[in-house]
Image 1: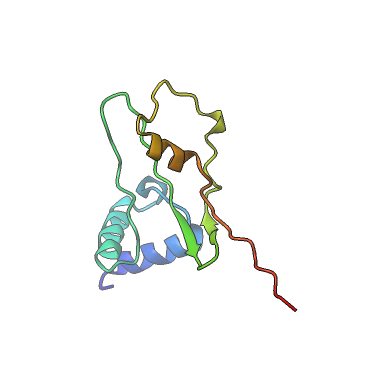
Image 2: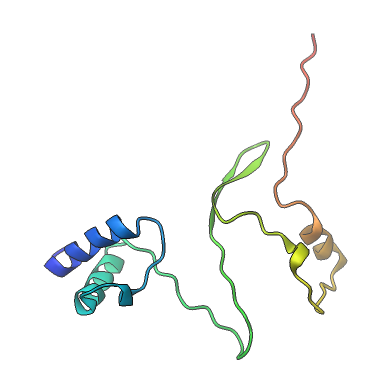
Length: 118
């Protein structure tokens, strides 16, 4: 990075917020932070979280996780816990039966190990 502000901003981000999202308002030098964010995004050093919107009054959520897909299993190794829809009540329902069965099924599929013959 070329700018002194950008280098200092990136070092502060790495020390205070190594894996967490942050806001520019949390920095003492907001002008330097804005310059640093722009240059870090140009060099792909930071990943931006765009503001997701829908219709007025609607809620939008975004979940990110690291998933390992193996031949016999799928595992969540980093990120939020597995989504639990038990506490969510809605008047909206999925009309397609095939899609509803797919959504209701287990998210993480693990095959049982085969027993070796002796």
